[in-house]
Amino acid sequence: MKMFPVYKQFDIEPVRGEGPYLWDEDGNKYLDFYGGLAVISVGHSHPAFVRTIQQQMEAPGYYSNAVPNRLQDEVAERLGKSSGYEEYQLFLCNSGAEAVENALKLASFQNGREKIIAFRNGFHGRTSAAVNVTDNENIQAPINRNLDVEILPLNDFEALAETFSDTDICAVIIEGIQGIGGVHIPETEFLQHLRKLCTENGATLILDEIQSGYGRSGRFFAHQFAGIHPDLITVAKGMGNGFPIAGVLISPDFEAKSGMLGSTFGGNHLASAAGIAVLDIIEKENLLENAGRIGDYLISNLQSISGIADIRGKGLMLGIEFPFPAGEIREALLYKQRIFTGSSSDKNTLRILPPLTFTEDHAEQFLDALTKVLNYYE
Image (cartoon, rainbow, N blue to C red):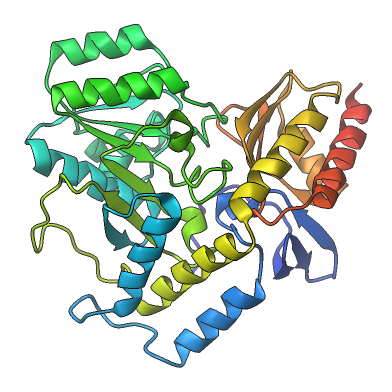
């Protein structure tokens, strides 16, 4: 049996990781400016993270949600304090797509409506409902195209007002910062207006913080720059530093009913232990502050490099746009400079998603490598 192909792969297989670095089987060392697609939040093989997982393996590594699990309660308490959402409830699951599925379901349970607003270049997952609100028909099978979804331009106040005036909206789903779409940021005024419209019309506001959350922007959640409170917040990726864990933060306005949501593996003992370890490290090492500081440092220095058309993002979630396709730049960075970076659906934009533990020295290594690569194209 062969593996079903998923993504186009580089011909480098990491066999070891430590902090911001990876090594292949030949001993070559790579700087990870990709973080496994924003998943590696506190660095590869962080000693405290590894120790926590090892210790939990010697206790119950798994049992179902049919029994109490105090680790889940600790995840919820710690996440509430770290994010500023202590009054919310937490549903734990396994992946970002699953979190989005359950958030959309909760919204429809809450108001009994069906129509969803999403945004161009948005990405929310590949499962049935999540892929419906994702702006990419290439990954939607015929069986998926069954939701009433309106895809609007990001930051378009007029289109938003027109859509709200036409019908009862169940929910609006928007990323704190668009990731796969090329790192585009919702304007502060747009998010604030969106919050106002949802409140006035009884619609649920869902903030997808799967990629932009957990400190990546320099705040715990990217939407917090706009000073708003969504009804539902989806989280995953950096939540477990590589261990599958995800969740939905649920406003206290939502009535909890037993059996409404469920998950076999969600919030299992190992996953919860991983989630607690990540929050510990983020707090103890001041990683939110570090992400904001190193992100500002990168943006400031990138602005002085010729050959860059635009720089977008916040903290350690950046998009570097070139006046030509970024694929060759990405390959040159990997094969000639040994630096992993990310692509996007915008072929001219390179995505930067390193661990939140990055230092100025790591940033300088990347800046120097990018300058060398771009000099080749001048």
